[in-house]
Image (cartoon, rainbow, N blue to C red; front, side):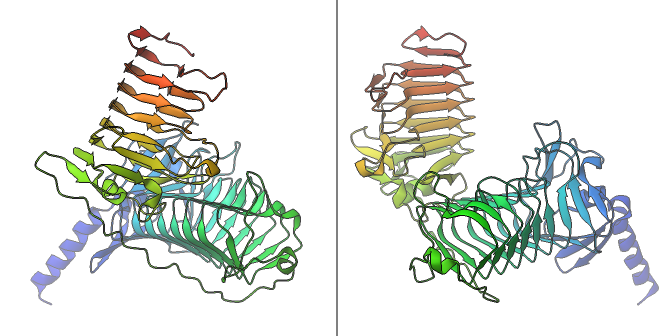
Length: 549
């Protein structure tokens, strides 16, 4: 190499080193950058896509980082917590690896209401070989060790996740989260909590020392999840596995030993598949913890019930294999915008595909049954997802500004939902929402039982107009608003709801006029209007007092 080329290479290396905090070392290979981080500041500064961060130090206390709770970056920020601490949230990162370069590397945090690390809308992330947990100290944790929301293709490998965190892994709206050869211990609720997830796997893991509530593995409104080749011992909780609306959940090749449970299994709606597991020396009142309703009995891979006597004699199988099926492709796209400026939809899938900011959706005549959507309960869009409920998923529209859903009249188009524990339509963090000229309610299925969810639910939303709609029970409440403002409810019928026509909490500037409210309460002494800690709420010109009602 010539002297000139040598000089340029050395200069480039020096500039690269100068760009890293505190003397961290970085090496680029193809499109991936490798950074050695010896301090918590170097760890935070290195968070970026297509980056391998190697932890060369021993302790990384997030609460001692310079700029803790104040300074972030494009890829991480600090969320305030109830106990005046801050939670590290890593968001929008793809292709990140954080791994220990030496044994004993540990990432910790002090606030009990914070996850140690929270990942939001991330993909292809690997966490390998380090320990993570809350620092030892006073207080009871309400934050998990690793939290993940809206993430996909996440790998936790050879880690040690410990309490007092509520769960080792707390997942929401995730796909493809695998924990392999990982210890989850001493958590105060359970090892895994997952809602609205698919392809979740714990393989060759050790779970012990958990004294919690509910299930050691608690899953809701999810599908294709498994715990295999793992040891679960010395835990105490209501149940080992608690499922609510979870399809195709598998427990295989595990040893469940020296635990205390009220009931081993609690499975609502769908059964758990069990294969090659050994249940030894457990204190258990019954095989099934029937709390809300009769638990589904566990089955084998053929769907045949495994009776209690057989469960007691099962032996552990070695190297059980499990693989989630390929995720179904949702090929439905929104119709193009018509000459009238609206997107005309004819099916529930077209309705979901059309949900977006600054969009006017026109419902052609017909019934839009949300439970008939492709990918119901698992697939989600950019601005909507399925919320876990006890008896099935409910639709939540989130972070949309400028959405209109309208039809030719309440008698012409109906949006309905089957689950009785979910709202028909929920809105989170939305603005400029117009709902006009359609009917919404729960499906009229007498055998399904009474409802525990309302019809329309608004959280942290503003500038909402509901006009010429018909909202019906068995929903508990026609319209619920929590921390909302600037809403108008006009010429709308609300009927046969079991609790109230409207329920408002902490909201302001809501006007109701010319509404037809009837058959509310089902014979119970329930108020048509429930208004708590609100300001400037009026109905046909009548102002409600600005206090709890």
